Image 1 (tube, helix red, strand yellow):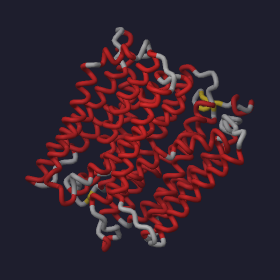
Image 2 (cartoon, helix red, strand yellow):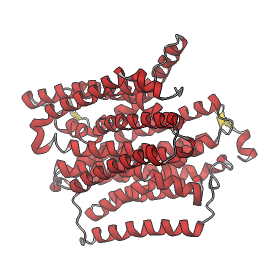
Image 3 (cartoon, rainbow, N blue to C red):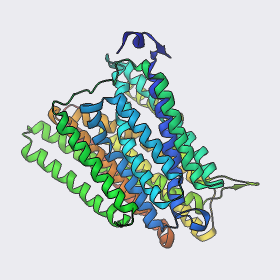
Image 4 (cartoon, one colour):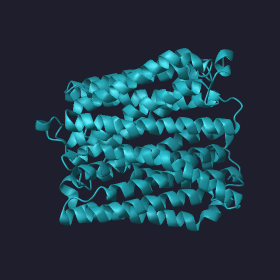
Length: 491
């Protein structure tokens, strides 16, 4: 890092952290603001400015979009590491995100799908690399680096809390496209801030981490990928190519599961691992399944739970009607308020020599997810029999889900870096992102089964999540000690 940048501080941290903090805050503002509107817009009637899609189709598209965001992080990190460097990659990613949101603001169906694609590609370029730059600001590592990531994480959730409130107020009360445009304006604000303050980053993220020795070949790969996307998008926008979102979501789910199975089979049989490494990879496999199951429930927030907020929740208070998208702010608000509490609990337990292992934390996360779905299952049964229910039901559901997230999510990536054989860490990280993508796809497909014409099945389906997530959590809890033994000393 440049000397002048390293000498300046922001609340005791490198001043470059403020650049990344506010850039990510605005990116999360735009992402969560748009997410709060997406399914509601797609299922709204055409005469009201919506797309008039069925719940099944809309939630499948949502699942594909959310899965695409996580999958695109893999090539996004590759481009930054080998070709552009994180700073330039983040800048380009931010521009694509803004263009995507503005495309969503155009009341033309073709621009809607173009906008989703631009946001997916842009987020894949921005998200992994802005986090990588946070790490580069702290070459010494240690507790100060952890504290820097904690501050950065707060910025993420601050933007995520504000975005749905502003974008939903505009989108639901005035015009859907105003909400999408507001998300684009938020990303532009982040880009302006990044451009004006990026000098504070010094050398952090300025150059590729592992500059490619075959740049010509790598640029050809990038050009081929972008060209393929452009051709498919062009044919789709021209009406020459029709894709069934539900079929595509189901097919992609099968492909991701197949890729995961093939990778773990290859790792066990052909990667030359010793017995200890194989045991640790087996633990990653178990956590992969648990993670995919958790996110398949947690990511109902933007689909089935968002529809439940709109159709089955009392939102009228006096002369005011609360936009359904406002409920999307609950999770980041709870994260901001509860993350320090959960951290304090872990510290207090460690002082008493009681430190829950990896499997136990994952188990508790799944059990809390199940409790949250138990609440909304009861609420949905009431809603079907007696009409819309009080918003406290959804608030309670999001509360349990957030605590579950705080138990499971922070240890996920960390556990992979610790358990994976050193020569396979990068590949294992990529596979770990597949679990989140898989969860999002399943969430989208599941949401199509609990709404629209299938609304009577909503309580039953939600109870099924209670049984599968809670049952998996209990099994993990029962076998947490044997699983921990397989970790070979890794905690």
